[in-house]
Picture 1 (cartoon, helix red, strand yellow):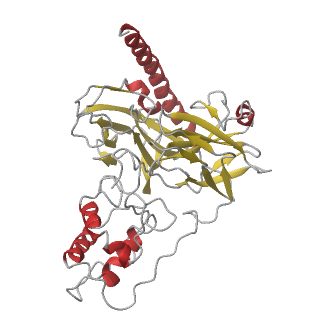
Picture 2: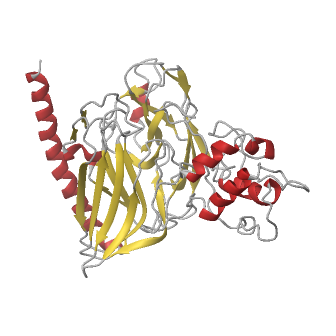
Length: 459
């Protein structure tokens, strides 16, 4: 199946609706479940967007031959809900593009396999059609790394920035971004930034190695965040009235984190940009709980600890609309839960992941914006399992785990993408977020100081 810790995709489905397959999942007209009549529509709707030639999955699931020879594997991964990959619990927040296979579809697959996986009579259904390269269709602009970068087979994680000039003579407004890594097994994540000064290109030119070291680009204070991608992620689509401004002539930066896989790989990342005809009329606000990926939470997880927990909260000074939520942790992250406590005593569920998987880090987009009033408190809780019972634990036996950027270190946050209901409240909301971030920055300094002292005393 997959290497124990490598983010290799086995069976996945990036399709967005269950429309058009209800009749296929109801074989009431006959007791015989066949591929042509019942199973093909499920495979095409739920699986084919990844499981087809040229995509991330390692094999195709388009034809009868493709599916029949892997029938037992499909049965196992669908009944255990390992595939299609969708980790948000149903009923705890409603999201667009839910990839969860319906119970009736899982049962139908099992019935078909138990019957010997018959193909059925008649002409097989037509194969689905997809955009040739990009899921969102033809982009307005594609940005690529200017040179290939080689990731060695072994060694520590690599953090590197790759700038490329954006060939625009006028300001643009970005409504969506889609990222495509070339060496998927080694790209842990990539953050996208715009550098209006273009200084990133000068920094890159200081030596002959593609890109330059570091994480965070603190030497480029005017940079603009354009979102990012992590293993298992998809395209980022921004609210129609809140595209991101892209100044003309900026440098586009891939801030990338690589985790060597045991095999030398070459990466040339690409990003497709989709522009809006209209400028933003609303401001985007990012709320991270805890801020700074949890560095101020003092992560120190003992070997064998199955229930180590961090969390944070923010009380809103003004109403907001939440349009997306992105959880993040590494291998031993286990459970994510977020909710809002309302001023009237009620509670609004926002996200619940019971079994975190490092290999599938989605941004969950709400089916409808979640409106929270002033005085509502958003809360997060992230739990880690550092025991031998955790099959995703990268260390055997388990070792003590601290906060860190490496894949086998830990971090944790739940990031909410929000819009103030009123533009007049943007400043107040950002001030509240900034105050919380400053608190965690102070806590982070204390945490790192204590870590250094402990390290010296152990020598």
